Image (tube, rainbow, N blue to C red; front, side, top):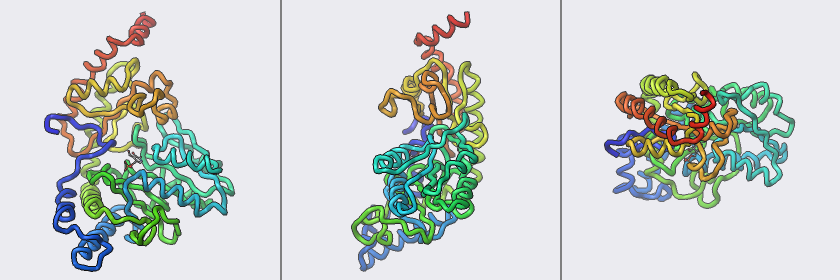
Length: 392
Ligand SMILES: Cc1ncc(COP(=O)(O)O)c(C=O)c1O
């Protein structure tokens, strides 16, 4: 991808060199199945266990609390559906938010069809929930609170530690989808009162199609996949050894450099925010302070987000929009509607997500090109014409 400015790291990231190096032996010579007893199998098994140890260390967990999966979607599905099954005698009420990823939202909707009740907490303009509202939503039959650690579209970081405290005071389990947070901001499951946490390799420069679910010790979560005895019988299927090894190497690297990366990336993010909010009729989406270091998200009035993404692409810049066409529907993203944006404004959304591999030059180029792109699109927009006529 030489010559391209990649600013869509919330969608996926480039595999890091250290992850690739760690994976290579397991894609070539060390191809053994970890369930076999001879030497190549033992080598693979040892690599998986070492990866488990690294992932646990990265999030303040114990190795036996980490289960490898095929990514964030599987981890979310497993955590929510299995908790629902585990606790069905206690009740069928779950609390979540209106801004969760579809991996959580659609899983909850599938449970609603099976007789579970879900309270979706609304959020304020910054994408934050009210802890008071959370507290009063808890009922005697509430079995699970599932709230994401950080939002994938607007970057808002939610008060997970406090949410976990409230859940535990009420004797309710707490799951957090931390797919966008792990490797980018410090996470400690014990300090943050988390019982179940989902993470995904490709969001922090690991490979795609591999993730993990943290399950607090003592929680007897039913199996996520039936079959062989892998992952202590809870997640059957031959392990994705290269993927698991690559995920662990990438995460170890991310956590080792987390402070320096957060500082470097947030300086570039703030430059994007400062520069792009100078464009008339634009605004930042998400919390201005409590946001992921790499997420700069906006709405621009009288613009279609999708056309912005296409023009940016023509200019060699990869970005994304939470609006209409990207999700294959005519509605703007549920997250942008939940923070109170009217439909017509939510359609003009743009998400730029950077990481430590971006440079100041990338930021300068984006800042130079964006105003012209916006102007070009507005010049073609009947809405812009109407808006200007109103002003005159
Ligand atoms: C917050 C969040 N949860 C879950 C997922 C799904 O993860 P995966 O792509 O590993 O299935 C994503 C991916 O974009 C995400 O951003």
